[in-house]
Structure formats: structure tokens, C-alpha cells
Amino acid sequence: MIMIIWGKEHKARGEALAAAVGEKAAEAANLSRSNEGIQPLRCDDSTLSIWGHGGETSLAEMLDVELGALIVAWKAMNPALRTVELVTCNAQHNQEPLAGYARRVAAFVERKYKDVAVKALPRGQHADDYSVLWASNGNPVSFCYITAPSTRTLTYASDQLKALEPAKNYDLSLVASEMAKARRLVEPSNYSVLAGPDLSMIRAMLSVVRPAA
Image (tube, rainbow, N blue to C red; front, side, top):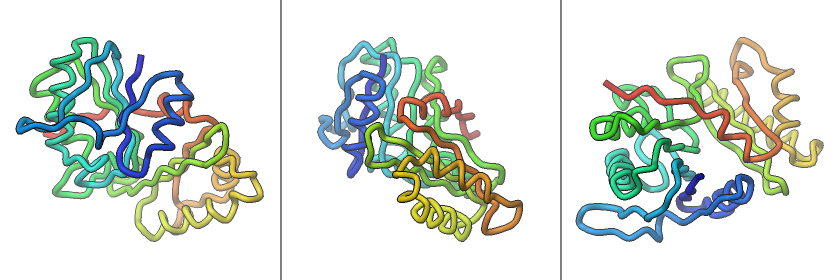
């Protein structure tokens, strides 16, 4: 069972993911807050999935320590929790000295609970990868996850995706297939793509995050 929390501007995607996996969803902004931070919801789910804008410092408008504290509080209230999924761009950036948002969250959680795995979309082929997760507005909602060694390549790949969308009827899995054919080992074509025709497939692409030291 899975509980999905979405961040600002991700209502449609959060609800689409919930519909795709047949589970429930809530908005992060609607969670109660106290002096102890954002308060968890009581539920029986073994998985908590969080979708929102992400970067080196935040996800769904939560800093790494805020999200880490929320996960710890969620586990304390809901002992069945075993997995936390961070569905976002850039979760595993390795831009020093930050060492990746997802890794910092995983380290925070591991200090309290060893039996909770934090998962995120994978890093690319380079130590300094950048990434972006695109989702279509169709039904079903398709998606494409792009990683690149530089912002130049990431922008180029995103522009390619946007240019190919109309001809593929906005099915991003078909767009990704075309992009993969055009991929080269030199910039700006040395990006990588993961995609699927339905959001329910994205969860299988998440990998366990190794906590930051």
C-alpha cells in the first residue's frame, strides 16, 4: 500500500500517480504543522511517495532536515512504513559540498530507523549529473526522465523532447525512444533517458539511495 504526498504545482501529477497505482494522495501544504515541524498522517501504508519540485536543497518545499524529520515522525506514527520514494528531478545530484539531497535525507532517517529505505530516480553516468523528470498531460500520463553531465546537455535534451512531443501524440515513452536513437557520446547529445507510457511504471525505476557519510 502506498500514500502519496505532492508538493506545490504537482497536484495533477500526484493525483495521476495515485490513480495509476490505485492509492490515495494528499497535498504537502495541507499537512498540519507544529513547533516540532510538519506532522504526519496516520495510515497503514508501507510506502510513502513524495512528488514535487526538487533540487540540491529541497523537495516539495521541504529542506532535507524537514523531510527527514517528517519521515522519522511518519515512521513513529506508522510502524508499517518501510519505503520512502522521492519522485523528483535532481534528487541524487552529486554537486559538492551538498552530496545530493536524497543522500542527506537517507542519512537523517538511517540515524533513527535502519529499516526504512529511501528511494529515488537513479543518477546518470557522470559524477556531476543533472536531471529532469517530465510528465505528459495525456491519459494515461506518460513520463520521461533525462540525466545529463551539464546544464547545456540537459537543456538540449529537454528541447528535443518538446520538439518531438506533437509527432508522438505526447506519449513521452515514444519520444524517449526517438531520443535514444539520436544519443551520442559527446555533448550536447550525451544524455540518458528512462521513460514509460504510464506513471505506474516509474516506481520500478527507483533505486535505493546510499546515505551520505
